[in-house]
Length: 126
Image 1 (tube, rainbow, N blue to C red):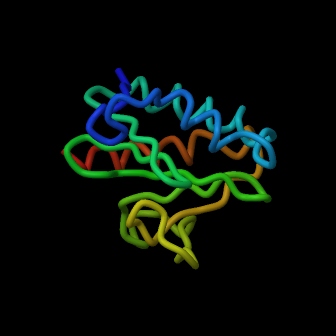
Image 2: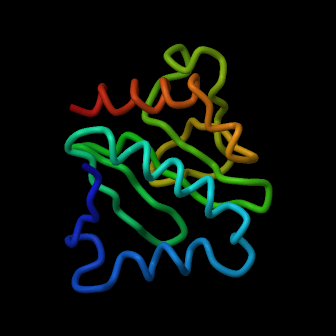
């Protein structure tokens, strides 16, 4: 089950950080974030770590990070380009230290192929 890592935010309320990250100009991206969060919650030993401008997902090592953008949500994955099957691109700015990812422009973009890539990154982070 996904859980928030208190070491990242101390005694702060992680939900407040998420609300701030997906507030104001990023309200439209919140349903997509909620889908990704629900999916990562199904992956055992996953920690959810809200940070400045992004949310990390880890299991010992960070395997994914998301950041809201005006276009949607950038999903960065700890995979190499070959493992990404041509779907990953080099990101202009690192997201949680990860340099490869994709921009998801709506909830329909979080499809079975994207979930498979996210799970592959999760498996590699053990």
